Length: 178
Image 1 (cartoon, helix red, strand yellow):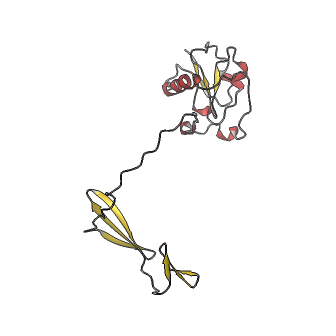
Image 2 (cartoon, helix red, strand yellow):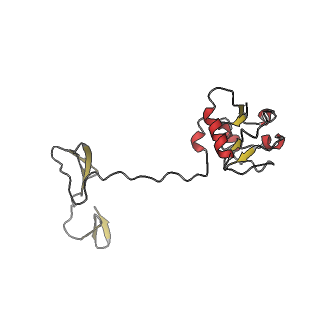
Image 3 (cartoon, one colour):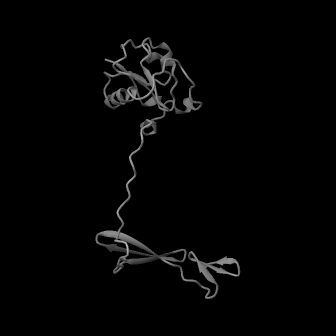
């Protein structure tokens, strides 16, 4: 058995547990602490010291994910042997549910992927059988093309025939219209 830090530590990071640990098995991330499962001697002195009640024995059910997180980041994050600064809003975060997505790991996120274009560049989609809507004077044509829905914006017709057009706006005598 070992003790592990669980979700409620995220954004709380009180560190009272660090001061009582006899083997210095805590490691510090930006907004979370972890216990190194192989360094923990299972003494349990840290568990009652945590104001956020975030330290649990790994024998409790449903903590496999948190055991994996503690194991992984104890190998990456720096060891902490003395309490540091507690986040100023720690009390506001204490007890809030669903904080797992807020865990800052320091790992580089996966590169974003771009969606494929709906149609090949240079080839205009066909809008046969589509519906047309008007929103604030702009026409929207919606149609299906090769199984994908396509929306085409049609420029708003200008009420004025003179003036210059720039980026879809009609300019006349230095004033904007349409």
